[in-house]
Image (tube, rainbow, N blue to C red; front, side):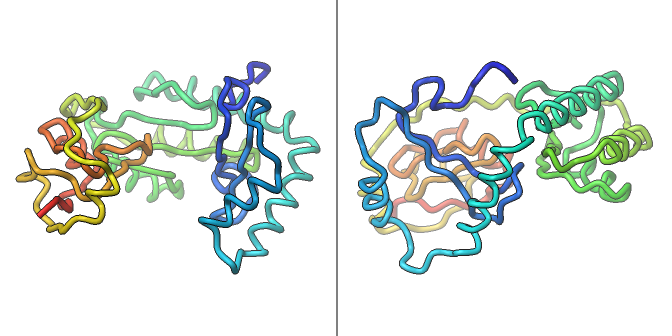
Amino acid sequence: LEKNIHPIALGADMCCDSAHKTLPVLTGGAYLHTGERLDISAEELKRDMALFGSTSPSWLILSALDLCNKYLDGEFRSELAKTVELTDRLKERTKGAYDILSGEPLKFTVCAASSGLTGYELADRLREQGVEPEYADGAHVVMMLSTHNTTEDMERIALAMERIKMPRLRIEFPELKLSPAETAMRPREAFFSRREAVATETSAGRIAAETVSVCPPCVPAVMAGEIIDENIIKILKMYSIFQINVIK
């Protein structure tokens, strides 16, 4: 935890941090951070944000963020270190029976496909054991942990994983690569053009009329104005996106 890997610490000028995933904040709460190199005042930021914000903000969310600030200023750092340690133990305990992916310290990501189940199937079996995953796709299950998870929670996850019988016959999925696509027009021009919905399967060579992001990793699989290719189609289908808007 001593190594600061926050985007601002790594040189970003501006970064928006969601607060409702692993912090005690209502859904929709987030912080906007600015780096020291960015020559802009808080008042200027507030003015600029008004271009995109509502004239009726949620005071419940804002209050939740204020209360969270007090929490972060208290024992959060030590509690976070304890949670990371508990998560590491969970990964160590289950990695012999499952393929556990490395990455963010508070995410417990299991490659179900390497043990013979789809991510959706493993998620359903975990729910039967009283464990609700954060996310599942064709190959993976993700559990997102926070400082409010207890040792008992970790034990419940571990026991649920141990009770599930895996076929052990690996399910193969196509290798996906996020790479820049060929651009045919600017995003704004594409977004305001006439469009039609077509099956993803038949969209190769068409120009996307919308930006489609997949989560995780929550980056665009295709941007409005880009030409859809076979690799993009594979990514969209992997995330169960079977229809897309294209330029008419």
